[in-house]
Each structure stands twice: as structure tokens, then as C-alpha cells.
Length: 149
Image (cartoon, rainbow, N blue to C red; front, side, top):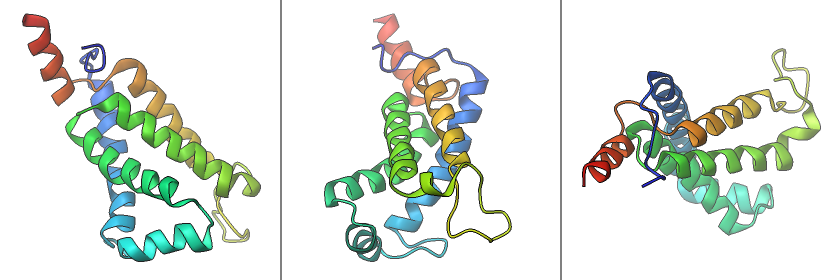
């Protein structure tokens, strides 16, 4: 039951919901083509052929963002979702964003974006792995039920 245990705090709830919505929206762009994204097959082709990311890793990215985002929104398997999203962000920094430096491309004068956003996401994920899902989560309900048994 340690996987589901949480401090029950509101701060974890806020971090979980905000990150969950943002990651779900990013995943929806890749998986469903929403919000100006591509279809799943187009996204998969771009990752595997243009970015040269191995197919299993591309699938993990899509799952971490789409399913991990959903998991965070409802607070189910929060620690696993947060680990997956953190791994996704570490991979994004290593494979794409490191060469552009820390800062985002606010003025459009660089070829790409830096990794400051990714560091913030990783920090949020670490907090969620340590503290759990927080208030109003499925994880909390599961942990409470297991504690009474």
C-alpha cells in the first residue's frame, strides 16, 4: 500500500492537477491530434524517423504524457505517472533541448527551446513521488481502504 500512501495535502493536489492537465494536453496533441497536433501515426513517424527515437521509447513518451497526465488528474498511480513523466522530461532534455541551453526561446532568435520548463516539471514530479497524490485522489481512497482492513 506504500505506492498509494499520500500525505493528503492540498499542495500535492495542486501540483498533480496542474501537471496532469498540462501533460494530458501535450499527450493529446501527439496521440489524438488535438490542439494543433498530428495524428498518432504522424506523431509516431516524426519521433521514429525524423527525430530517430526508437519506437519503444516513442511509445513510452506518448504513454507517459497521455496516460500519465490522466493518472495525475484523477490521482491514480500518481508516483508511477510522475516517474514516467520525469523520465520523459529527462529524455527530452538529453535528446533535444540540452544543446539550446537553459532558457526558453522568448524572442525567437534561437533554433530551439531550452530546458527550464523541463526542470520545473522534473521538480514537480519529484515532489509527487515523495508526497503522493494528495487530497481528492484515487490513491488516497485506496490507501484509506487498505488501512482500515
